[in-house]
Image (cartoon, rainbow, N blue to C red):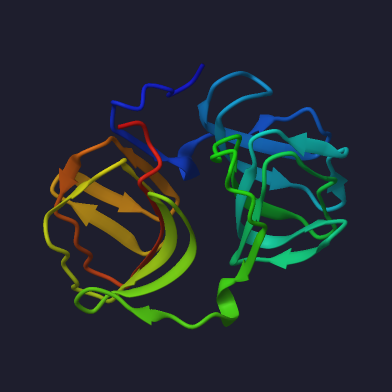
Length: 216
């Protein structure tokens, strides 16, 4: 097990982590949280070398992906950087990458009733007005769980707030800041149920945010 105590706050600068081999040749990963070595609840950064592929495999409790670099593909399509993907519980696919890619992956973390398949190319999706000067791009919602991109303009501050069901952030660009630290591009943060902070930025920053999904 790795980082499976959801009562603790985690901050991981993924850019500083070494790549580890996966079962597929040419596919590498940086595990962030993991229930078991090759099964169960898992969150990772994964890199496909050009021309690498995984054999067909199932997702017993779903798979969630955000493409960070390159083009990720499977038998159903090609997904360029900025694409958000949800494959529901018991779905099966055979992923590969012709040119190489880097993806953020969450495995086996769905509610078994959440059966929606999602494909969002965020590069051609409009932003919506959020609180203050924030811009928000909703990606998926189910019961208490909400996933979105949030764009922070330079100098923006958000009100102090708590996270019912926790909060998870991946910094996609810029630098995210709160009273506990500064988090550059590539930082992954996991904050537990009812944690509180007062976030702000100094430069334009985009984050991938998930809230309401951790144990309460």
